[in-house]
Image (cartoon, rainbow, N blue to C red):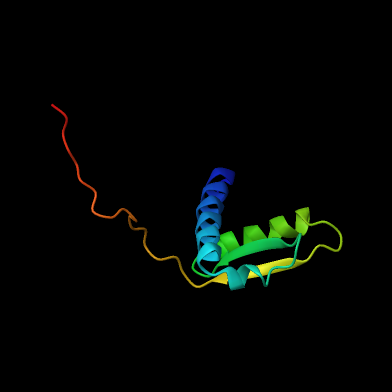
Length: 89
């Protein structure tokens, strides 16, 4: 996996996790302040390993680590409601 692929996968996962936290604020309350959150998608073991390696290398002394195990990510779908396409004359 290239660094660009790692970045892209983590960007997508972190965006989805942010959306999840907005819908489930009680989960956000479980995360200690200043903790490092590590996203671990079970269906991508290489990404799990890379993310764990990254957190070990970059965590500050005494900083809490929170593992977020993700069973899977549902296929993407649009959140648009009844869009209308109009071709301008």
